[in-house]
Length: 47
Image (cartoon, rainbow, N blue to C red):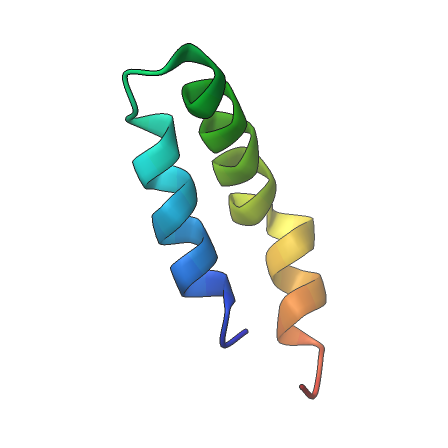
């Protein structure tokens, strides 16, 4: 999960962007990175 926090931070920055496309990508990424199943899968990894 070492890259999860920076990825989520970047996704949140994109979600707050004034650019429509960046905002759409950011919101979608935040949703996916915050999903309980994703977090559970990442917690189970030994990487």
